Amino acid sequence: MTTDIRSLLADYASEALTRDERGQLCAAALADQEFFDRLTVEESWRQLFNAPGVRAELLAASEVRGLFDAFFARFRQPTTPAPEDRIDSLYTELRALMVRLPEEPDLEDEVEHRFAELRQLQQEEAAAMRKRFESRLHLPPGAGWAALQEARRQLKINEDIAAQNKAADDQD
Amino acid sequence: MDRDQTGMDRDQILQALNARIVGYTTSKLRMTSADAEDLAQEVLVVLVQKYSHLEALEDLLPLAVTILHNKCRNLTRKSWRRKEEPIAEELWEYPGLSPENLSLSREQQRQLADAVRRLKPKCRQLLRFHLEGQKLKDIARSLGEPEGTVNARWSRCRKALAKELRKLQDLEGES
Image (cartoon, rainbow over all chains, first blue to last red):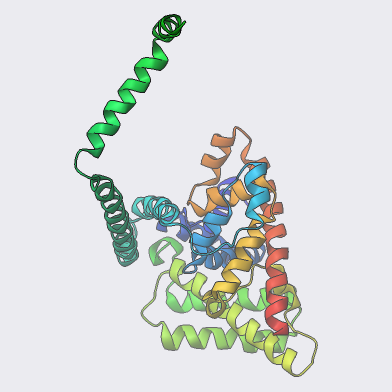
């Protein structure tokens, strides 16, 4: 087995191959029994990695965290990934698909499907952001200005140590 | 590769696939020649009847493997029910979740995620690179290690993951 073919085999399950590369790999498998046997294993992994829902779950679970996070992760319920995590994984998946799309027009439906999911998640995220922003605007009239003035006053006192000392001297 | 590149037409591809499937099932799954021939025929029948529109080798071969795995799995389930020796024990060496099983329940997905979390950090990192669709040479470059080293580690990591997945399947078989 040549290095090139071995390298193609290593990339098969992750769907990183172009159609032409996959063709080369399949031709090699058809010509060589040992290689066919190995490709059957790779095909099995490919199916697993590309099953609906599984990829996102695996991506979320494969994130490498620090020791502290890892400890507390044991007590956390691994449920549906957070929207922002799903958005990240969709970007990753789309990047890989878009590279292959020119050579594999069949992927167009899959790309559309993921774009639709991405758009929906982003719209939901934007709506939540707007809601948070608007809730902060709902202060009682004048309360925001008063808070700002108080913040400025506190800042001035803390910055001007000399002023604090002077106030103490005056009291004495 | 299309027919021009292989120099084979669809019938020739199917014939060659038949030989490879028989070779695989006799050597790896330890089937008798007669059983292997029968199984290969069943796979080809599906390809001929349901997928007559597919001509290219890169479409036919992965599909043939998928059908083969499903059929092997069905045979194993049958033998399990009959309390016979499973014919395709070696299949459990694979990640081996068939398409029907790939519609995992939330509970199975949770178990799968737990299995991944039990892997070593370096394995999880490699898994992530692969799931992101990165090529081996790019992964090796970003890790600053030789391709062979990274590939060998990836192979060990997959064995560890396959072991975890096998536990899920055992649970599924018991339920």
